Image (cartoon, rainbow, N blue to C red):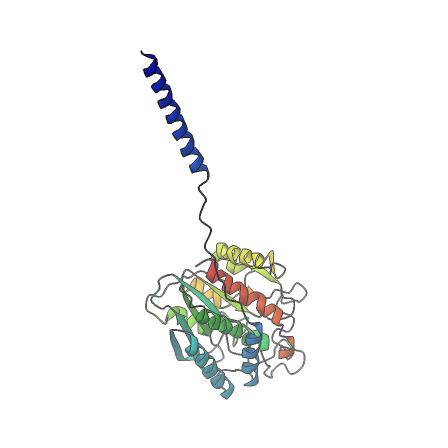
Length: 324
């Protein structure tokens, strides 16, 4: 081998090593593209409060009453402003006491053709009797938190979904006749959700999951992992609770588990086969473990807390936009 050839060979080897080193250096400096920015709408508690007050101002929304019809018209008109499609289910329902009640479920849909759907739901009727009160237990009450505020939170969420041009399929379901029953009579509550579960507004309707809210706007609420929700949809409970904590609302969404209850979500799970959870105020200091003003004349507008409404409403929006 000549000296010239050995010299050229050495240069060639150095060149190869140099190129190999450059490739490694380049691969080590490749950066991962940044995660996309998720813009979650900001829930407006002032608007939700106004929607609550407007409902309460109609009077108790007792089935078959003038206030019930006026409030139903109001809620439907709001959903028609923002949703792509609005459905109304009306039917005569014979209650446990033999009385025929004119039921009205109001449903607003965003992106109705989308297969990936999420349900946000609450009841909008008022119980006819303040049966948990020691005074005037047979008289109606305002139902500011038990019905009106939950519907208002859902309505404000709908307004924000429309403003943000949400791409996920979302259904706003305001169920009627939730609060007419008696605890000792099976299936006497939640007539509206029972009817919907057996007669869905769209043939073959399905959803990935649903979130029910009930009595969620009192001061300093405590939301436990309710037993029916954990039985049917524990993963959705964990998702929502973690989302709430990440958004700064963990002080309301406790890690404690509590006994299961019969609420609209029970029939959505059992009859409709759609996993649904309940965000409902659990009170450790009352015999019923419900909110302390539950089914009393103290369920009035002065008990509604905007901070609580913000915590629940913002959590709903965070779930929809961060986990579409």
